[in-house]
Length: 511
Image (cartoon, one colour):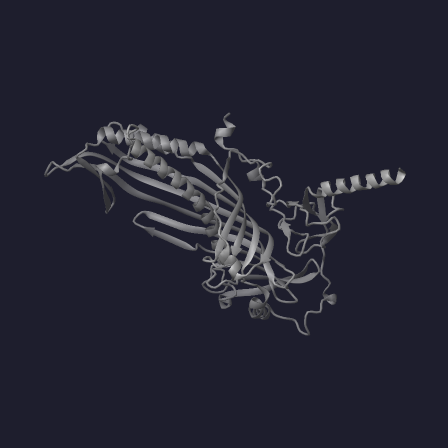
């Protein structure tokens, strides 16, 4: 009886351990000296599985049945001693890493001291050996944030012969446009393929979107009002001419209004319903394809890709390299190299290079000048911001795989031009001008797009496996008015920052 009870208690204890183990691990990684959070630290808990801390030093990992309580857990960051424990023993919500100063007398890299340029040459010589472009299946989490704000919306010299299009209405149009707007998209997916944009297939597992629907409603209502005004004031035998400086375009009356379906016309109504259904199905596919396209675009910037705009290797003569220091990443010794333009180059940044195999394990970069700018006849555009980072880890096959991408791109555009909308009559000959609206407008807006990708698991596959993969991708993103941590419960994601956690749409906050 005692043996049976003991055995029963053992199994109960074992089940409770497995139950607890099947949950999530969450913690914040901080510096033991400064107590400041350590962003982008790597948490490795299997040969090819891991996560990364966000910009505020926090991480969460979901453990599954493949993970054992005895599996090792490593937490490492550049310049710190690696923290090592087991998955079953890890209980801390705050994890401290101690700085690790390198002892040069213990470093035996070569029988000579390499210069920065020599190290860069070694990097270039070993790129093909260190990185693979073969087909793989990657479980990843993708986060996109679009932020827009209006710098100015001014106008002057307003004149109108259409009573409804008066100055008050124009002011209302301007005030209806949100001064700033945010749009978040989060996607968990499996991505099949290599780094070639034409060789990517996506299987969306779950997705969300978060934005303020009020802005859409306001603009829809405004469009309906403008359509009503045009119907009431623009004659059926008229057309509009829109002019801005020397440029102009003609719009016929029938193009002004949306096609309406008579509810008594059953055939036409069924056709419209079928078209709406087809459009919704296409939108699902477009969402998945759009995410795959954006991920592929980020892949194209990888420094070892052909025609990458991060050309500090392919066009290294355009850059000056300098060795800042040697440090540790785990047990590996890492060179830290800074690079700045020496010629007509666009970027500056920092390379973290494994001193043993000369693989770049991390890149931080930012532009030093506008990447693209345009100004002509009052219209201007300026791509002024492009910065980010890439982090790699060494897989069991001694090849380096991508773990994390962060990118921020910003642009500003606008126009300062005259605008005229003139109504002409098709029938009347000679002076056939009917009505006119004119003003000088001065408009400018800034857009900032931010992206994050964290890859949890990479599994090599054959090209035939890739070719045979096809996905319906019927999942569309769930709309959220505010960040809901329960939405992603049970899934590995990169932890949200404070801005995402506190975001609330106006429609939600006004309740």
